[in-house]
Image (tube, helix red, strand yellow):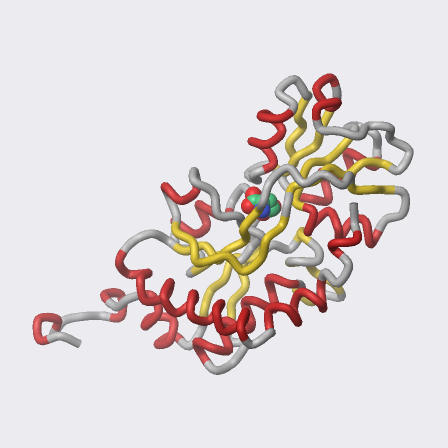
Length: 250
Ligand code: GLU
């Protein structure tokens, strides 16, 4: 503590120091995005959960010192900026619009947007959705892509992935546009659906943080940890555990 800060409280410290002092990191995570963040037998699990645990282990020495807070694609930026959570690990892509209001680490995974359809569908391109109905998840990067590539499609937005999937199941939409990494979970669990081979974007998943000086040390630490997870092979092991056949889908 500096000489000029004799009355400093914990609140004056940077976020990384505060996390260490409280011996807990508060992480916003998905619970509707299998196999990245989902609940099975009352347990939160998935790729992002394992990344979160590896981060807690490196920062606090114990992978269980995490309070997980469920977030949705739509809520996560305000959950972060209102300080409900310290960081977000929730299939969140770095994108220019978001970097105006929040900050990101380096990426830890690359997904791509794809279309999921019923096996019986004859649709074979995103352009042919122009006269049709498409389901998307509100607050995701899919919203922009569909307006760009099929501007005349009728877009139906849902707050979570299960509701969007039900639209397709009940033939209320012709397709769903979302990250292949999450559509993969639905393909594994449900017979009769397919993912088209095209990928319309590259989605660089990263840990999201608030902007500002108090997050500087935490961002540096997170980038070091992600580099370590990459170089040590841990990230690849997490990939093999949760999405071993992603490349074979679509
Ligand atoms: N990666 C995409 C995004 O950040 C979609 C996945 C999601 O978070 O639901 O918007």
